[in-house]
Image (tube, rainbow, N blue to C red; front, side):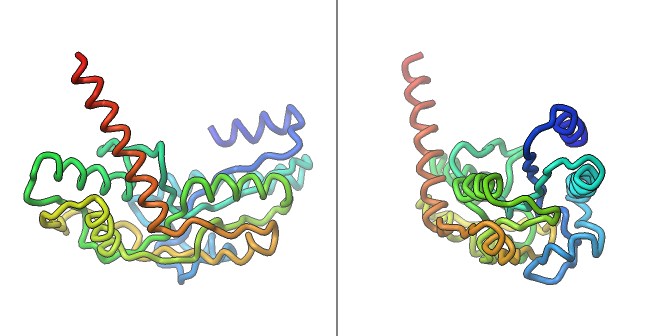
Length: 233
C-alpha cells in the first residue's frame, strides 16, 4: 500500500508527500532516547517487526524516489499515539485505549480486578493526536529534507505507572493483575525530538495527564450515547 502511494504520488507530480512511519521501526535494544540515525542499527522488537520493517522500507523508497525522480517525500516517526476517536476495540487497540476501556468496563460491572498484559516494566512515549496532527502540518509547510524526523514529547512513561494513573482517573478501585505470560513488547521507548524542533519548530504541547483526561472524557461520552440509544430501544 505504501509503495503504491509513493509511486502514484510520483506519477501525479504531487508537490509534497508526508508519510507516517512508526516508532516500532527502531531496533529492539536501541539506546534511549532514540536518534533518527540509529533507525537501521538493528532488528525491531519481534512482535512489532513485520509492521516496523514495512514502514521502514517506505523511508528507503521515499529517499530513492527523491534522488531519482525529485519526489519531495518527507518521513515522520511519531511516538505512540492516543486521543479521542482512538480504536477502543480490545482485540486491536493499543495500550492507552485498551486500559481506559478495561478500567471503565470493570467499574461499570463492579469487577474486582482488571488483567493487563506483561509485567508493567516497559516504558513508552505517548503523543496526543492533536500534537501529532500539528506536527504533520508543520512538516508539510516547512520541511523538505530526506532524513526521517521523530515526533514526540521526549517524555518516557513506565507502563505500570500509566496503568495506575488511568485507574485513578477512571475512579476504579479494584486490583490490577499483571499477566506476565503475555509479551511486554519493546523494553523502552523514548524519542530524541531535537530534529523536529530545529527543522520545523515542532514541540508537543499537551501533557500526558491532560491528554488522558480528554481521551477518557471522550470515551465516557461515547458510552453514555450508546446507553441512551439502547434505553430507547
